[in-house]
Length: 191
Image (tube, rainbow, N blue to C red; front, side, top):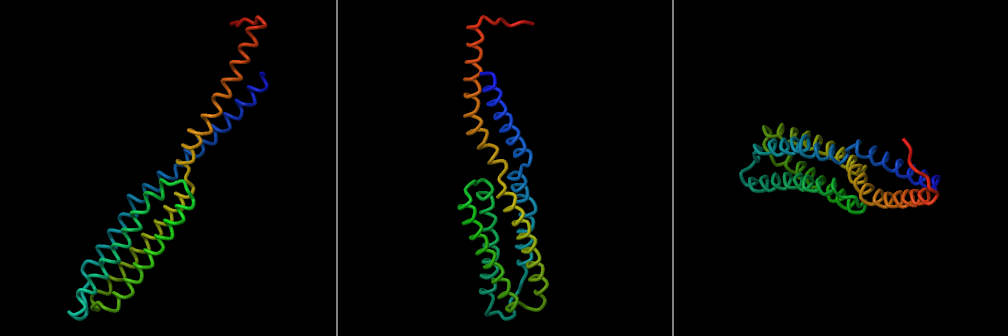
C-alpha cells in the first residue's frame, strides 16, 4: 500500500510540475497584452494614416472613403477575433478564426492597393504609412496567434480542474487505506 501511495503521489507531483511549468509560461496572458497594446497601437496607426487621404478626382471621393472604411473595418475584424482566439482551446475553432483573419488581411491589402491608384500624389505617403502599420499589426497578430496556440494558461487550468481533481481522491483513498491498515496493526505514531 505504501508503494501504491508513493506511485500515485509521484504521479500527482509530476502533474503539479507540468501545471506549474505551463502556468509560468503565461502565453495566453502575453497574447492578451500584445492584443491590447502593440496590436491596438498598430491598428490605430493604420486608421490614422488613412484619415487624410484625398481622391485624385472629386468623383472618386465616395469610393475612396468606402475603401478607407473597408480597410479599417477589416483590421478591426482581425482585432475582434484575437480575444476569442486567445481564450479558446479548440484547435479547429482557432484554425477557422485564423482563416477569417487571413481573409480580412487580404481585404485590407486589396483596399490599400486600390486606394493607391485613386488618391492624389500628396496622399501616397499616407498609403505607404498605412501599409507599414498594417505590416506591424499583422506581425504582432502572428505573435498573438503563436502564443495563443501554445495555450499554456488554458491548458494549465484544464489540467488543474480535470486531471488534478482525479488524482487527489486516488491519493487520499490509498492514504486512508494505508492509515487504516496501520491502525489495524496497532502502529502508533511516535514523535
